[in-house]
Each structure stands twice: as structure tokens, then as C-alpha cells.
Image (tube, rainbow, N blue to C red; front, side, top):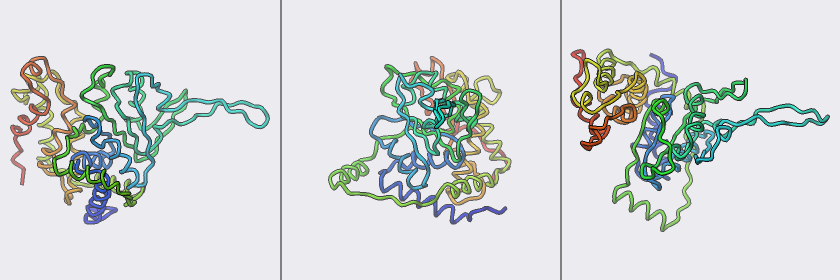
Length: 331
């Protein structure tokens, strides 16, 4: 197997990217690695957390480190689809002739931050669907391709429910991962306060560019997936489906709808990127296990009994992941 970039160089570059982001973002390793995995896997990521945890700063810093075009869309109830994808404008030439021209919107960037996405109406949220899935934008009768790499990082605030529109399941399923951004530890909070006191001017360096990011994406596709690892990913998804013969008892009791086939695809796609980040050219069961909560937590819908008993997607997935056996082919 010939990779366009050596394994050691891949790991070294990713570590440098982490180090540069760490100059600005204190801690949040799970969120940083999750965004990198989704970027390398060619998917999108949903971040959930209270304000002030550095979600916006993370993507802006990543754009500087990777030298990629960045745009931010603040979702509000009055935001219109044209505010995202762009619109047709009338131009007048020197002779007074008029013609329509497409004016691209902020979706035309490599890294797009959809801030507080659940504040916009469903009509506006759906404007992202085509871009996220097809990597194109349609205006009128014309279709406009988006530059690669293309990553949407959406954020939502879990504590404000008034005036929000929960993301429909069809759109949630298009995010490779949903990452819950936690509060910093005491030590991390101390470092954040120290930076505030000293007001240090921190500069981040460019580590790689667009072509190198695309090369790393191609390298991820060359990671080997053994048969037993493939079967484990499939078994894990089937265990979340209450009507499946392989359903876990908790799935039958608490899950209304289990993961779609996209869940199994995402486990393998994200797992390949994680394996390379860990310095391996083959996907392992442990990679799948480590990624499963972030990949599946937004793909299962709980029933009333689950809410009544205080169950959460994470608590149920923890049991399902631990109980799912590995095939005999594991080495």
C-alpha cells in the first residue's frame, strides 16, 4: 500500500496542528480531535455545549493553522436561506445592459461555522442539507460546486430551548459526529484565567495547506478494515435498532428508533482517520469503541420510558458498546 504521505509524517503533522491549536484553545482535546477526524473523513460535526467554551474560536484557529477559508454564519430566527447560500443579483454593464449574476453566500468556504444552528427556522436549516450532503449549492436552475475540503461545524446551546427549532432527524443524521463540549478542569480554568490576566499576544503558525489536507484525506481511505472490525461496526448499529434480532435489551426497552446505516458508515470513516492519528494503518475494534458515543448519540431516538427513567443516549450506548461482542476473527 502506497500512501502519498508517510505514516510518521502524518502523525507528526497532526500533532503540530494540535499544538498550534493548543496555543489558543486550552484543553478540549476531545473536541479538537473530533473536528480533525471529521475534516479528514470528509464529513461534518455538531458541537453541543454552553456558551464560552471556545467552540467558535476552535474552528477559526483551525482555519489559520491549515490556511483554509473560514466563514461564520450566526443563525437567528429571521435568517433566510439566501443569507446562507447566496442569491441572484442584477448587474448593469457599461452599455446599460442588465444580467443576472450569482452572488455566493458564506457557505462558500472550506470551514463553515453554523453558530447556534437550532435558532433558525426549519426552512433555513434545510438550506444546509444539499451543501452538506451533495457538496453543491443550487440557485435557480444553476448548480454551483463547493471547494474541497468542506466542513460544516454546527453549534447548539443545550440550555436555551425557548425560541429554538430542534434539528430534524434527517439533518442530524448528516453530521458524522456529535461532540458534547465539557467544562474545563480546574487546572485548565487556571490557565485560561492566567492568559486573561497577562493578555499575551499569541500567534499561531501555518502547519499545512489545502492540498496537504486533501492528501491526508486520501491517506485515510487506504487504512485497512479487517473483517471482524467491519462486523463489529455492523453489530453495534444493529444492537441499537429495537426491531432487530440483535437488538440489545435496553434498545428494546428505551429506544424508539435506532441508528441508520449512516451510523455504520460513519464508524468506519471516522475510525480510519483515528487509526492514522494513532499511528496505525489498520482500523481496530478499540477505535470503533472509542468513537461510537460521538458517532451514534445523535442517531438514536429515545422513547418516553427512557426519559421517565432518566436514561440518556450516552448511558444507553455505554451499555450497548460494552455488551457487543467481537467476532472470533479478532487477533
